[in-house]
Image 1: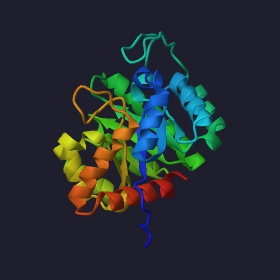
Image 2: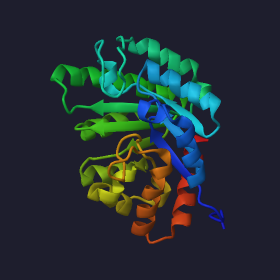
Image 3: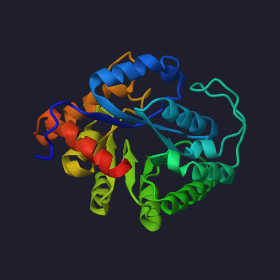
Image 4: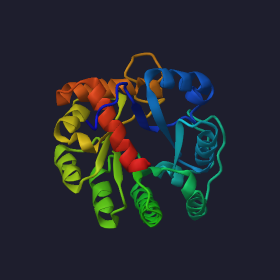
Length: 269
């Protein structure tokens, strides 16, 4: 039996351990994850600072794997201070960061977090995001690495660009697009990573219903999208994604967790 694991094995393919909510208590977060049965955590970089921290964390901790990326908004940023990262970050050259990612190709399991975020963007910013997204996808294809893709208020555009450039393997992170796009993604053979807020998201529950188990992965997007009110999300909470996937698919949680772990191994190992 290919699903003969006797213990639950969990994976979190998308989180942000660089965020101070997690980084400042990382030992506790990793201890909780290990106790919950989490075998692997992919921390996603979004800019030069977090990319370097992702590599540092992956080097120190066996459970942590690094994905390096450029978040669409970060690619356009000016020197600014954000609530998540109370530091002043200088602008950076996209091409220089892509070169850095290329140099570290043997130390990463994926390119991410990348994509498009059109929610509060001007037309000019949208076009600049598209240029950056295309560049990163071309690099990912050249490096033969999976991509972890964010799409916010830009789902159709993201799907069209991914279809055009066709990188090796595609993981749609926390996808919020219409069901006709969900079906198109399934037909394309891409993957969905299902975050812990599936517990209250009909959209994500519908994706799980439609998508083959072989194309599902689990994530927390921690410290965001916590399934529990008043708490900070963390990788150990990924069990909530498994519980809901198992319920929707009509299988037990052990089987759901282990199938998804095998999907992770196939994609990222």
